[in-house]
Amino acid sequence: MSTIDHLLAAVPTRLWIDGEATDPADGGSFSVVDPATGAVVAEVANASGKDAIRALDAACRAQRDWAATPPRQRSVILRRAWELVIERTEDLALLMTVEMGKTLTESVGEVAYGAEFLRWFSEEAVRIGGRYTEAPAGNGRILVTKEPVGPCLAITPWNFPLAMGTRKIGAALAAGCTMIVKPAEDTPLTMLLLAEIFAEAGLPAGVLSVLPTADAAAVTEPLIADPRLRKVTFTGSTRVGKLLIEQSARQVQRTSMELGGNAPFIVFDDADLEAAVAGAMAAKMRNGGEACTAANRFLVHNAVREEFTAALTARIGALRVGPGYEADTDLGPLINERQRASVAGLVADAVAGGARVRTGGHAVAGPGFFFEPTVLDEIPADARILREEIFGPVAAITGFDTEDEAVAAANSTEYGLAAYFYTRDLDRALRVADALESGMVGVNRGVISDPAAPFGGVKQSGLGSEGGTEGIEEYLVTKYIALTN
Ligand code: NAD
Image (cartoon, rainbow, N blue to C red):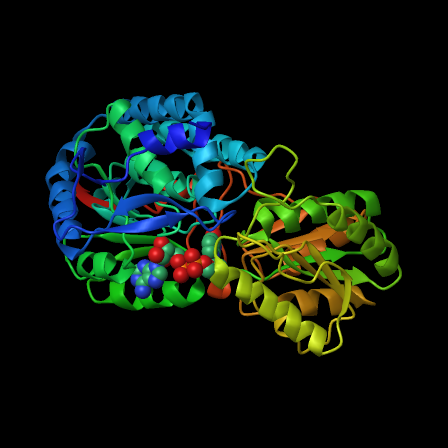
């Protein structure tokens, strides 16, 4: 039996409700596929609306005690979960590679990154503050306290199967909230294993439930319609985010939305080009390009455009494509055929309009959902690839002549999640960072995610922040207590 078969034989595949693995009320299962081969690797229990309400019942029963659990105790459980996730790095990393496709190196990186949210929020749990002042009129005292929002629903995407869960779960649990997680249908296994790890860390029953399903709306709609649910936190597409905002309006639930992006990556003519190419590789190729923070449009000053493009093409063209669990792989498959067809469609549209293919440009034949690492330049201004999120290993390069032109192009999108630029001029760095309409800006660096920093977008990229000292606030409500003198 291979290491992968051993792991899959031991991995949990049932729903996790009220502190135990359980079968779905309506029975049934759905398949999880290895995107490197297209083969089914697991059958996972398929939750329905009935299971969702069972999980909410459990969350509501657990809510009061969990909120009353001393912050230090909540902190210790989160810290223990962090330790256990790190101890299980090998299993979690391999599992993510098998169900999602990224390379093992990337998966090991995600375990460290995802676990860090648990350690970070274990530290935040004991620092929930309040405020006490004298009323200006002198007739009373103003006491401001923070309370947990209450039971939360988290809906997570497939691109970071662990980290997109832990950054919501860590913050919610630290704040004293209970949480039901609906993981992406492509990658439910990692979150089910995490639920077991949390139980081992001492998390009381009902505080965390995990409901995999092939029919997301069947699980999420009854939850969002239920007035006992107090918050919806989502990472995924802007289209689904808008639907969830509409649905949550009916019960006036709090929402946090991490949605799509269309990140510009600007290279000014005074940039350190070697550093810019290294940063571009990270910003574009991290996670195979399947990241909402991925550089989507490279805007390169015309004086350095050919030099930058040639260097990036050499690096991207040299990437070795293959299954993520094979040692010499640099780039794994895309998540599924739908995503591959979407990437191929964007490339075909750009090429039909006159874009030049510097390397790659095609789907890879054979089993699995591979796409060649690709660089395009001479892209027509109306190409879809400049407006839509690529979510794949394709770098789209256009040129500019002035700083104003670059900033205007960068901002000409309804998205505003991440933006990157390279310059050696400090005045320009501060000016451009201010001018970019983006929730996050990377200056002379291609990777910006950090559990200690607030992650979030503006415009149609979302609402709220995850991580940082801001992250826990999303799970707290403010109460004002008026005291007389
Ligand atoms: P998606 O929005 O379709 O799916 C994300 C999650 O939402 C999954 O768990 C899915 O099951 C669930 N979902 C889908 N339809 C739903 C509905 N009607 N009601 C409730 N839940 C629903 O996104 P995707 O197909 O997984 O990814 C495609 C796009 O998502 C990407 O192109 C990108 O724009 C975006 N994305 C963004 C991020 C981010 O961090 N901001 C991460 C991953 C994906």
